[in-house]
Amino acid sequence: MVSFGSQVDFSVPHIKIRDLNKYYDGQNQQTHALKNINLDIPQGKIFGIIGKSGAGKSSLIRTLNGLESISEGSIHIHQQNLAELSHAELIQTRQKIGMIFQHFNLMSAKTVWENVALPLKIAHVNKAEIETRVNEALTLVGLDSKANNYPAQLSGGQKQRVGIARALVHHPEILLCDEATSALDPESTSVVLSLLKKINRELGITIVLITHEMQVIREICDQVVVIEHGEIVESGQVWSVFSQPQQKITQELLNLEQLDLPFQVNRELHNDSTHSIVKLRYETDPKHSPDLTQVFQAFDHSVHLYQSHIDSIQGHLIGTLIVGTAQTDLDIQHLQEKLKHHIAQIEVLGYARPTH
Ligand code: ADP
Image (cartoon, rainbow, N blue to C red):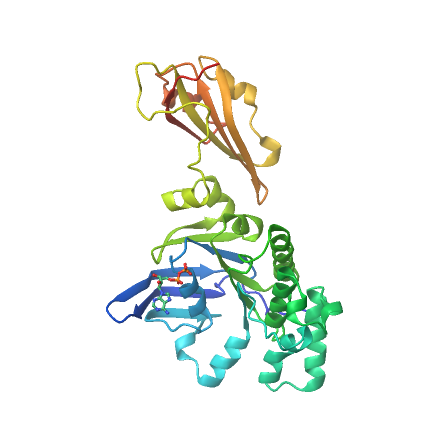
């Protein structure tokens, strides 16, 4: 098997970003696009950066391979400060960082094979080596049979696979993905994400991806940071950030705010309220999913289930139940104590008068 990644030393981060600031000077004003970013990206992992449009994701990923200059702070790759590299060293380091783009950036007048060969031609690699590497990359992405086709003859998913093959020909240690699946339909998205996962696992390449889609993070990332207005507002293992999102922006991105019940829930207790609407959240490994009989028995009154959602992320089950119980003076602390071995978090969302 080909191995593109270098020797793994897990004790030091592959990419270390310290106090990074990025300003853009406009005609009338300056935009502070990245604010004191500090990040350690481990080797061999898939690292996701998520945020809404304008949050600073592109600025951040583009500073990693020098497509964008940094205003303040430092970026170390394998303990080498990018700012201290000579021109020749910088070129060499850049070759170790592949990148794929939302709109693929393929040359329409060149065949698939020629597109993939281009970075090697530019780097004056000899013909025999180009031949070997292009064929190897096309096999890896499953497109050997399309070598002589032109981009216009390919689907979006296939174009992105050409983009990935092109990014791999220099045998990179890092692959940057800029909204790589945002222009694709769900099926192609799934194929491209599986391919990225395969590349990461089989070749040991560190992948850094930016996206505005939680689905992408959920499917392939090990760790995630959430970025808002140029700042990192939340970070951690994907399952942990998903199970207990701290920030409103993360909850919004997770769509947790959507409560679609067949009756109105009021934050305040109204005269005609009869029920408390309660959110129960748990996280466990799949073998220890909570016994719901015990959970519901902990309530003093009958319990009705109105909504439930269970995610399986990186081997963890994360469950959310929205229930109503016929009581408006719930002692949450007491309930929490009774359920401490089953339920991680209990919250009264509001009060209602369900009609059933
Ligand atoms: P995202 O990728 O999350 O959509 P960007 O990094 O593209 O965010 O943008 C972050 C902020 O920086 C935005 O306010 C954007 O308008 C601004 N910005 C990005 N690129 C430039 C540029 N070349 N010149 C001026 N402002 C820019």
